[in-house]
Length: 458
Picture 1 (cartoon, rainbow, N blue to C red):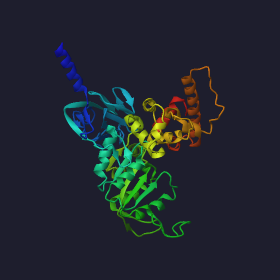
Picture 2 (cartoon, one colour):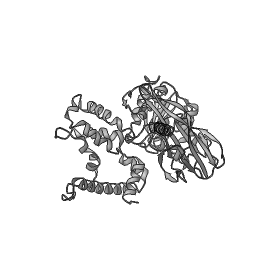
Picture 3 (cartoon, one colour):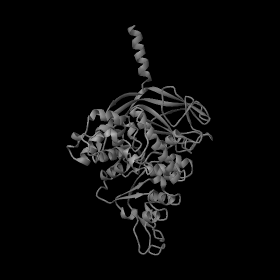
Picture 4 (cartoon, rainbow, N blue to C red):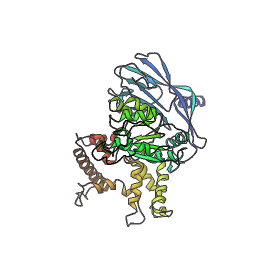
């Protein structure tokens, strides 16, 4: 009986991909794995997963480049975190299929079979292990988190901030990309030099070239004087290009020139000016998908993503919620603010079950709004989604509800009515453009798509 139990334990251990997670020692130990190609052009070949982010596609720059016309240029990627190896489809044309099911994201189990176009691949764990370094710190400047995913981000930030590497920060809206970019600058050798921020999504299309590169007097109607652009103003320092995925196709080759030759030319001028800047950029889009669909230059994509840092959504770092709540309470309302809360532990249990479509920004706004209430002690859980309810112009004081129903059912019915009305108006305002609607609402595109599907909207 003891022998059977030992055999069972060994079998379980063989299936385990995450072997240990020791934040104090600064390591995540995982099983090494390989991909075995069982059909397709590279049939019989094996590829070791030896990177945090392993990309697969038909493009030559992928870690696994497959000569298969049914596979997108950037098809999918495999990353590793505290729960194991996760595969994510990059909105490929024909999809990513795991164990016969088309997925957007899924964790891989040993022996899982992947179907990408006409190519079949088997995910095979090996006997050896590898260590993924983590930061020993629970913060990087103003950013905090003790979860494995955040400690991995902090390690990358600590490693590459002092270098001259161009950095791409990705993540959903509200995850803190702007804060991370600024902290990287503060921890760099350029910290005493200018830090210039350009929001590529907020700039008028006809003005962004001037904002980036400057202009000379008379180059267009309102150009009444010579003007320096962001790259000249930041000379010696850092330029942060937020929402880089919104940069127009016409400006992409000009930005590529800056990255390759460190020189710019003002609008309306032939003179070439040398500059010394570091570039950090951020996006909530999957730029690999934008490359697949021809909206973003592939050469620029690789130039910008020398180092990639992905900030996880709050729903993937729920253990950090209590830490964040305490930080925001002190930052916004002083050191004694925690005393005003009702039943902290129960409240944290409720907050951990919330999906947080607005991520860390939504949590911060909730804490800020809750203290405007006169009721004491404060129950933070009652303020979930209050901002969206309060700001919807379709919401009115006479919203109907049925008091004969249980409270939970009546509340869900009311919220669903709000969500459907809000999404209908949002889509109508943006002429059914899902990406623009998601940005306006401050939520992730995938979350908006789930709501559209949930309510049968078109």
